[in-house]
Image 1 (spheres, rainbow, N blue to C red):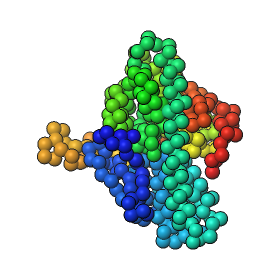
Image 2: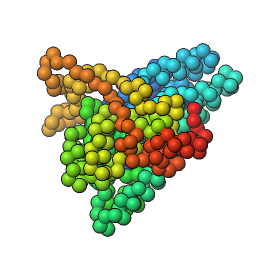
Image 3: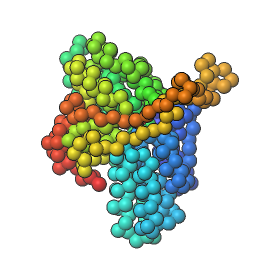
Image 4: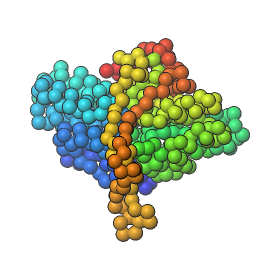
Length: 371
Ligand code: MRU
């Protein structure tokens, strides 16, 4: 997708041919900084400190992190150790485990001297496949948007509500939840996105709004509590969110607050879709309530980072302020689980499937990439 009119990636090989470049997402939207990863520790830090985030991009970064580890030591023991280390950085998004499994399954049967090249090739393939997967999510999601458009007055705007950032910054291209939106805009369907700010880290306000703005998609940032009100007043035609891990019964784990949006959508008869690559499905789990929920630090709730209002000379300088009563503790569960019964459908690269055990079993039979 584009930044200032120029196509950009979220992860790519540096021109040195071996280190890895990423956009430091902790600085967006105020600063555009490229970070260079040279070691497995750099990759692990980028994942944990959320320089990269979003389930598919975490997976791609882990795959390249393993490449960086193999540069030093391509033995089985070193690979297993690096893989466990990378996998432990964030617990909820299953794409991390998936990508590392794909890499290990591919590399372990090879002789050590062949592993390095093979690792870089496989990591590049994971990125390439994610791009195509997300494109196809958009193609299938566009059909849903067309169906909704057909029920409205010709030319009337379709209003989509999304939560967190399941956009191209969370993936390698297109995004998951945003891919149908980008495809609809390209097809000439008037579309507008309600962007939940997504406290506490504000991925909606800082990342989704940033990328929609750079793609000239009409959008409006709303506080997390506004969605239900907008739905009650007929201002939302459909919700599309992403997911960090979906269980094989269709329960969806996504950024904290997703569940409340699903409840409001259900109460207002508004379709609630989840867009996901099949690599985000945890086939081993039969209930979403077995998904580990990341608990992040209280400082994310008690403080906010941004730039000084009004700018001036310090226009892009990031500052952190305290916003809470001194001494009060904070809890910060980062994800929640939306039971499958509230999910209208799962938009995957293979098509829209029911969020049920049977729907997902059908999908699984079509897949070749279950790791
Ligand atoms: O904590 P984050 O920013 O990594 O959480 C990301 C989300 O919850 C996204 O909505 C989800 O990963 C889908 S990414 C395509």
